[in-house]
Amino acid sequence: MCLGVPGKVVSITRHEVGMQMGRVQFGGIQKEVCLSFVPEIQVGHYVIVHAGFAISQVDEEEAALTFEILRQMGDLAELTDTEATPGAVGDALR
Amino acid sequence: MRFVDEYRDGGAVRLAAAAIKAAQSRPWSLMEICGGQTHSILKFGLDQLLPEALTLVHGPGCPVCVTPLELIDQAVEIAARPEVIFTSFGDMLRVPGSRESLMQVKAEGGDVRIVYSPLDAVALAQANPTRQVVFFAVGFETTAPANAMSVWRAHELRLDNFSILCSHVLVPPAIDAILGAPDCRIQGFLAAGHVCTVEGTHDYEPLADKYHVPIVVTGFEPVDLMAGILACVKQLEKGEAVVENAYKRSANRDGNPPARALVRRVFETCDRAWRGIGVIPQSGLALRGEFAAFDAARRFDSSHIKTEEPKECIAGQILLGRKRPSQCSAFGQQCTPEHPLGAPMVSAEGACAACYGYRRTA
Image 1 (tube, chains in turn purple, green):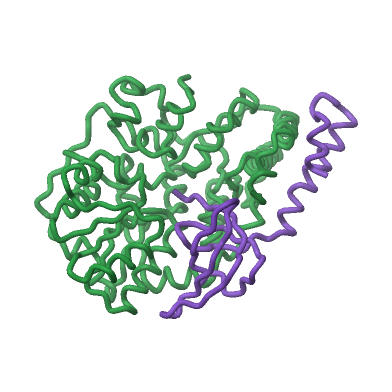
Image 2 (cartoon, one colour; image 1 turned 180 degrees about the vertical axis):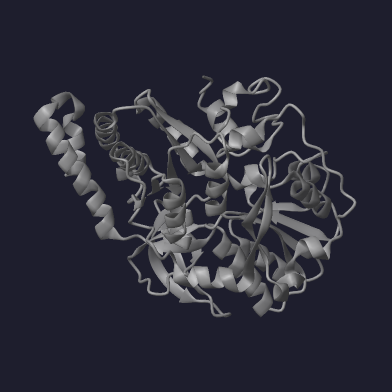
């Protein structure tokens, strides 16, 4: 139930009772989402959405870092064991 | 979809699996707290990529599973009232009560509706001033800001026909209860990434110290889960026991300050019963006194309800990680997702339903 889905903010509107709302794009669909808990958010940012509420802004630098660490692991693995890293993997990570 | 597809890359998962294998020198048991993580692990077959000596124990982090039977019965009773529009997240509808489920109430003509967000329930209350709209507010820390906002908004709109039936639960007191049990065999935890996105990670630091267990904040996609497991195994091998964040793109130490502030404005902590486990002190959220008017348990008297758990179900043992679903004599026999005896067989995030759905019968 703690499912959170990442999506891209495509518009920000202000709701009549002080709630900040906006539209968020998830793959092919858009939904109206409450943005009150991410007050600094701007159009183009990615947010994690749970039950109609954005609960965080995706930190894109940290996201890139995860793959940088994996890529380095991949480079190490390539040196020691070519079987562990099929070609497509390296490509996907680079 | 960005931030989803790349975290499901098979090559990256295999790389992480190789790194876990290389890092592990002896058997370890880890618990993933969150039912969403249990579901991902079984759906993507991550358990089958891990070394045999690494055991993943499925934790109690499924709100559908831990909501007490008394509350399900109360929901059923309220939903059957003609003046009520009863709203809920979809997965609560099939949870069996002592006599029937919300789905059966709906089949018998009750006005039970599935909503995507608690704000949809508030909008229903605005649109139906002559009806009582009740929202079944279950969930962990992740869902608390949404439910707090629904109450806050109803308060601002001065709605007198909106209320919530609340059974909010909190993760750190549950970890404390699991680790404090005398027969606990869990050596490391994967903490729930979205719970920590809202509440931050600092509440886990005293637990890591007190029980000397590593606690790794972990996301939900296959690459996230493998990265969390790897970090946990590395700590165990080195004899470390600290809180580590393997889901930094969403969670941080302080959580989400505006969300936390609203949760504390609307709710206060309380002792809470967990289905199958019992009362865990200070493990729940209840509406503060000034918002008591929005409490469905006060608005609708249901003190006459008698509850009865099915005898065959060992949900409590499953939720504490003491038994695996396949060790239950009813698993896959009298108890299936179509005819569940207990809540872990209902939700896709329940350990029993996930094991049944992805054929983990060993």
